[in-house]
Image (cartoon, rainbow over all chains, first blue to last red; front, side, top):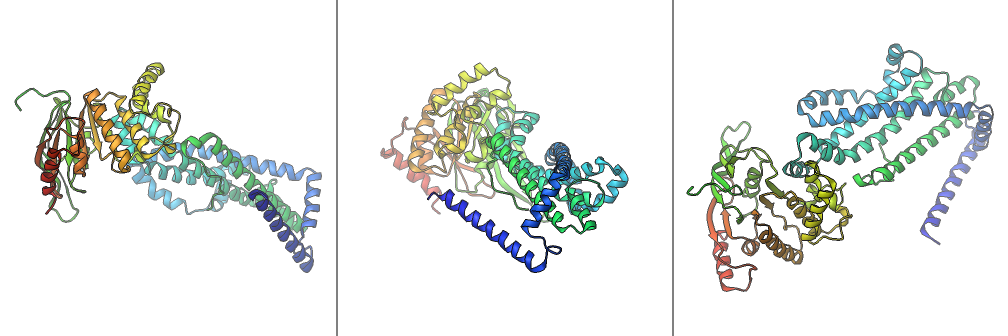
Length: 258
Length: 258
């Protein structure tokens, strides 16, 4: 038997045990407290039938992807500048280290006041969640470029600008990528919080709103969707990184841990 | 100086590099009162114990390190910053090569910075890649190469910019003994073919005697200086078993015995 097959069988057994334990506990405590896998599947089917589940997944993913893309696009150049220009770093670094301890969720009320109840406030929240992680990682990357690389470029006639473009940026790509990937996870957490508090659609809304109908099975459906969305986007980002950026040393397929 | 300075000669007068320890107030010299003239086309060795400031002196000539006082001239020009006339081969190929570029792209780096057209770049990189014996490996990335091959890439990379001066900082220090001998032999061949001025830093007396026309002995730091200069009147390729080789080896060894 090949190694992969053994691994696959182990995984299968593992998931079966989890499901069995879950079902067992559900029988013990009753479906109102803990809906089992069967009830959850029924609830999920129900939500799929009337189309809410897919539209909620769609709207949550859209918010995350838009805010995350915008956040990354702003954060990468910002991180490069902060890392490269000492005067800017001296001012920006204490501020970054202060603000990164404020979780995105804490800003929800303010963002609602500033950007309104609509999509803008949610996208802005994701943008915020993404921005600081990507800036800090890019900045770390710029600071870890080996001095020898910069020196050798300079003594081969590269100008300051060429050194940034042809040495510092390519050498920092793995750090940017790590930041972008970590930010994806944080974005999912932020969007759920935002949707719970201020939204009429989305997976977070589903989880929060189900309490009104005492539909704990729907909550479970929402939780499983979240796990799957996070897992799949992370894998997609990792795959894209491996395909497009392997030249820059982005090779890891391992899930990142925070 | 009796004759007019040669454009590829190096003229160092009363050179000092010091730093003041915060709080202590007094100056600490890394190198003190260094005077040295290296003729154009000469193979000059800087020999000294670890930590004696050889690399600092090389960095001062390269323009990476700023001097405290004195003069470093290349030809008639004062050294103020790194320049294409002074190529540097670093001790660690891993930290100085660009891992996101393959062998050919690494070798063409300086030419690309000069915006040389691709066909001309190709011609030059072909010439130097085969000169260092890497023909057939053009598409490989640094991580796919052995230590000796990486140092060959470094050598081809600097030679393709046609610098007047080669500054080499223990480039073979990390190689195994056999690869090292091969590289030493080939460096001598390349030097004789290209007629560059070479300053080669090492702490290995045998290596110094195999390569150099003259050997400058640096005293142990701090306040390191060039204490003696030996002429090596042996023809190339050098023969380890020759009595004169042994005699010189023993004489130089005496400097480091106490």
